[in-house]
Amino acid sequence: MAQCQGITKAGKRCRIRIVDDGTKYCRYHKSQGRIFGNWNNSKDSKSLDGPGYIYVFTLEHMLQRRPVKQDWLRMAAPTSDNIINYDKTRQLKPKHYILLKIGFTSGTPKRRLEQWKRQCKHQFTLVTPRMLSSIVCSKRDKMHVLLHSFSRLSLQDLGKYSKFDNKNLGFHTKLAFQTEQKIHHILHEKYGFGKIYCEGCKSTNGGIHKEWFLVPREDVKNIFDKINDLCQ
Image (cartoon, rainbow, N blue to C red; front, top):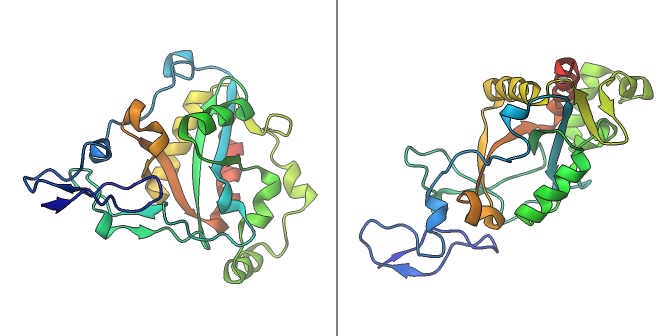
């Protein structure tokens, strides 16, 4: 008998024993072994491209002053069959890196984030320009940023994000979908992208979200600069 390679809601490896016939997941976690591609929202689709917002969000705990590792949030090297081997995963260390998801909506980012929260059952929060100076949390990274910028983020710096709507907490753009795709392409080239298993969404899309980016915290300001430049 083999042990299921699935990951429980508590972030632990499933203890269920299964027949050793090549099957790697029990009936409760078999969806974790499949990748069904991007989640598609019927309202925010390519065919409806037009004015909207680009928004950035992350997991709430990653914006704490001293973010700590979470046992349920783990990393694994990509495989040809997209099957996760729990024994080869490791906890994500959030001290120097942050997970960002960048999306578009024809509504408001606040409303869209609430939809993500209800669907995924995770605590997400929008990332805004006002948070940039606090995102870099390690002394090493702060020193590196200071050496290159010579100053902290000022009110003048905040003013340069001309496309950012402080009321709705997103970057306004004339072609939201196209802008999102351009941003994703740029970030793919520099950082790659991750697939996140989501227990809350396993019944709708196999529990897999794409387009999460694991980026150095000191790079977030540059990413915001690029988003503002691309929004028309």
